[in-house]
Length: 530
Picture 1: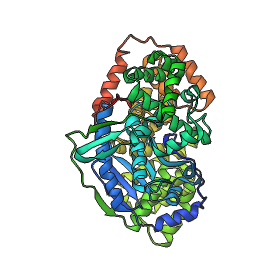
Picture 2: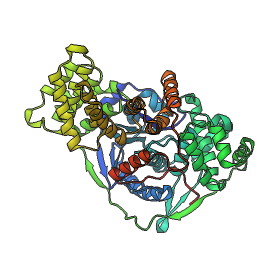
Picture 3: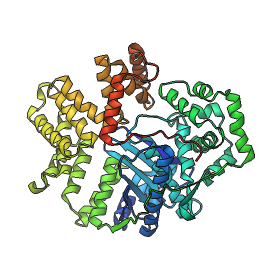
Picture 4: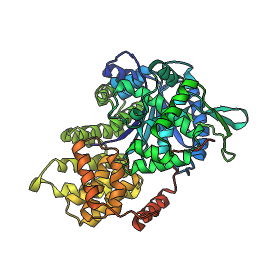
C-alpha cells in the first residue's frame, strides 16, 4: 500500500545468507536498549555505552549540519534502529538489503527513521558506525518535510562528504576527508564517466555499480563544495533539475563550463589524490547532552521489533517467527496485538485482523494505536468491496476514528490520508475530502500515493501552478513509465505561466502556511566551503 523514498549506504559484500525465521528468533533473545537524547531515539542491541557516545556525537553533528545547511530546527525527532552486527541487521531488513547496504533512511507517511549496522565491515568499529549515522542523518536533514530532490550522485555524494565530519578539542570540527571505503572503490574501479554519473538514478544503476555512484558522487560533490567556487551557482542547477531539466545541460549552464572542462576538474582530483579539508567550530549555542539509557524488557523489545518490521515492510516474513516466539515466552501485550492486526490488514487478511483486535480489552481501545489499527481495517475492508455491497456503517465508524486521530495526532499524515479516502467513499463534497488530502500532502509530500492523488485532483481543478508544484517533484520519484508519461502529458497540457521570480501567489501562500505550521524554513542541502 505504501511507497517510499529510500536513501541507503551501498556496499559491495560477500555476506553470508541467514534464514529470516532464525534471525528473528535470535533478535528477540538479544538484550535491547533505548538511548534518548534531545533529537534522537536509538533502539539498539549493540553496546549501549558506545551507542550513547554516538548519540552525543550525533547531537554535535546535528548542530553543525544545521548551521552549514542554513536550515532551522523543525523539532522533528528521528528514530534510529542500530543493529549490533551484520546478522542482526539482516534480521531487520532481510537478506538482500543486508548484502547491499550498511544503512538505510526512509521517509514515509508514518514518519522517518534510519537504520544502521554498527559493526560495519572494515576499519574501526566506532568510526564506521559514526559515519553511517552521519550519512543517514544527512538524508533526513536534506529530505524531511520538503519536495526538493537531488540527483542520485549528489544525494549520496553529499551524505558521504558530511559523514566524514570529526570533532577535535575546543569544540572544533573537521570535514572533507575521503571516506575510506569510497577511496577503495575509486582505486579498484576508477571514477564513473561524468555523463554516466550525472544521469544515474537509483533505478537505472545496477546494484554492482552503485558503489561507484557513491564514490564518484562524493568526489564531484567535494569539488563543487570545496574547490570550484561555484556552490551558489550549483543551487541554480538543483532548481533546474527539480523543474525537469536535463541534468547534463543544466550543470553546464549553471556552472558556466563545458562538460569537458568539468570532467577535467573531476578527473584531476582523482589523479592528484589530495582533497582539501575545512575546519570550523561547533555553534556556540550548542549545549552538550547526556543521553538517557534504558534497558528494554523482553516484552518491550519484541514490540519494538514487530513495529519496525510492519512499518518498514523490509522483512515481513520475519514477523511470524517473532510472534511465535512472543507466544511461547508469554510476551503478550495489547499493543503487540494491534501491530499484528495491522500486519494482517496490510496483506488482506481482514478476518484475521478483526480476530486479533477482538482480543484487545475494551479498556485499551481508546488508545491511538488501537484506533489506528481499527480504522484502517474498517477502511480497507470497504476498499476491497464494491458498489452496493459496501458497508456505509463501517465506513462511518472508520471516519469517526480518523477524525479522532487527526484531532489528537495532527502531525500524522496517515490519519489525514485515511480520513480523505473515507470521506470520498462516503460521498462527501470534493472540497471536504481534498482539504483532508492536502493536509496529508503537506505532512508527507514525498509519499507517492498521496502526491499522485493530490496531483490528479489539482489537474481536475485546472490549478496549473499548484499542479506543477506537486507534479514536478513527483515525476522524479516515479518508476512506472506509463504513469510518468501520463503525468508529463498532464503537465504539458496545463503548462502554467511561470512568473519571473516569485511564482504564483497561491503557491507562495501555501508555502508560508506550511512553514508556519511546521515552525521551520528549511534550507537546501547545498553548502559553501565552511
